[in-house]
Amino acid sequence: MKDKLAIIVPYRDRQDHLDVFVPHMHEFLKDKGIDYTIFIAEQSDNRPFNYGKLCNVVTKEVGKEYTYFAFHDIDMLPMNDECDYGYPDSPTHLSTHVEAHNNNLPYPQYFGGVIVISREDFENANGYSNEYWGYGFEDLDLLYRLERSGAYLEKFYDSNKTYSKYNIDDVLPYRIENVDLITKRKKHDDSICEFGKDTKIYGPINKFTKETIDGDFFISFWFNDIDDSEKVKNLFCFEGCDSGVFLSGGRYIISQIWDCDENHYQTNQSYYKKQWNHVVFSKKGNELSLYLNNEKKSASLPDNFKMYDYFEHCIKISDDDSTISISSIKLFKGEVDDKIVSDLYFKGNKVVQLITNQYGLELSNHYKFDKLYNRLTILDSGSNLNHLKLYGSIRLESKTLDVYDEIYIPIRTDGIYKSLKHSNDSDIINNYYLHDPDIEENSDIFFHDVIPNKLDYKSIGLSTIKYKILNKENKKKYELIKIVT
Image (cartoon, rainbow, N blue to C red; front, side):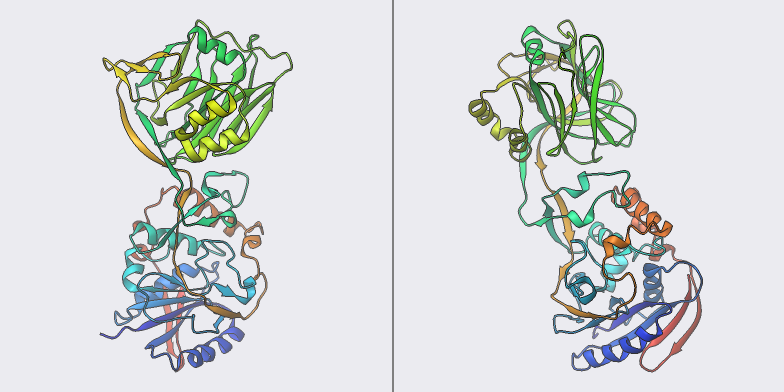
């Protein structure tokens, strides 16, 4: 059976654009050997415009002879042969050079404007979500659906680790325009300990460790908050007046330190759940610093700061009521700087010897979780051989940790598109800051539900769509479908 294309154009109140778009498309495609029909999906109600739902409706209404779809903005006119409307082997983004966008992608994962996709890939992804009313995010949501449903997409890595930099006060809590795509994976290997509830590692602080933390020191490790609990979780602390690193509210990592007068100082950053995060907790002179994924935040300590006396206290890793994964933990005696943190982040354990040799730092404690004695004791492999007792049971494994986030991108052509301009068309990112309640709700759905995978894409989309067809008209050059959403 010959493939047949349905060009699906969501539409409302743009007759001047429609009058230009349809004849341009017929002229552009006349010698391309493509069997196609243009469907204008007109939203015929007063609700906010719903691009994704209109696309879904038409795919449900047209016959199975249409084996693939082009979802098409009405204000984009193809201008070169790279605008290829032939059958796609995988989801393909055509509108990569759009006049209104200054011929650049508005952001690296942009999947709007004009895309072509097979019926099979679209239906496997359960189509677009029906939940994005008004402006924005339905294209990003579809991209995530395609990745999760197994469609072929190209894998890149984000060297900026954008989705690890959460800002609760931002309309875009992850700055999607800052994604920096690279092709090479950055990774390193480490030993991992997965702590369940009723599990912790616990043991006394000896004299050498006490001497280490009385001066400048820093602690480095990776963690993965693997459950949905939002309670306070201990990662690593010197117990008593607890100085160390903790998670709070399922969102923040907190570093805190106590002085001998039982005053405490702290700093915090937002972390990403269910993903590996690298943390460095340091005291350097009169500065308490928390590095998260190579980003630094500091707090000042008093000039006369003196560390709380932990000599008769204990080290605690995890706690009795948390589920958490933690990599090997390294405690260094001496001053940290940004270069050392960067080396630990990007190169892992491979640079430990280099750090001790080049900077004259001493690796005081190194809990690698790979040595047990009678299944009860974690043997520190540092020079001091601190031994901590294991309470409960843990799962140990070697793990490859990715420094960069995986990012999936559709196949892209070098399609050049002329724009039928209209208001607010040139800068998509700035449009997200119009304080429009629909935009803010769409942002919440995508960033808070879709990215963390809290929504099952199979339960929202083609499988659950509700709509009413007011009318269908054959206009000779296109078919008009009037839809109540």
